[in-house]
Image 1: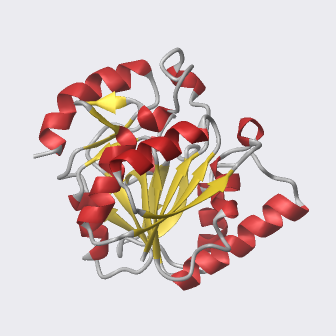
Image 2 (image 1 turned 30 degrees about the vertical axis):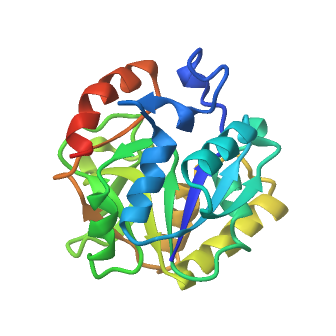
Length: 243
């Protein structure tokens, strides 16, 4: 099992906090988001990492080497991070993944048991969903069937018709990820479609008959850090998450 972490972006919505450092190095409760993410992955027995960096990547590498000396990690540089979205960063990992994997955005404060629940779900291809809060336009939403299989995913979905929010933590079988890599390869190298969210490629795979399931993790704390007010709120949440 490998862990993919995407951490290339500028995080413009968090400025001025990210003027001098990447978003994943912002601190909550005295620890960086990245440090907590890596610890949560290690707690679940995953020890091999692939990480896409871009903006101020040397700061990220120095932080990891200081906090996690000897960590099995492969870095991939997205040098054009200002002009592409997370689908491009994910595409860059396709030749480095050799088996089952988990994918995480680097800006999530979350309970490590969310990953544990994905691993114990019985589904090789699944993603973590929070179903208990009000949905709006900003969230990546999912629509599911009676077996929890995802039929639609995206920001554009009607909140009233959606089951919940995809929080940015996914588990892939190698077979699913290989097909995802093929979709991304076509979109980026042939269509020059570099500014999508990667969920658009998930949707293409669903439409082609590939199954991915929603795993409700609402009993565990998690939050995405997108705006300064999110970081402020996170300082209060971290005590509950790190218990």
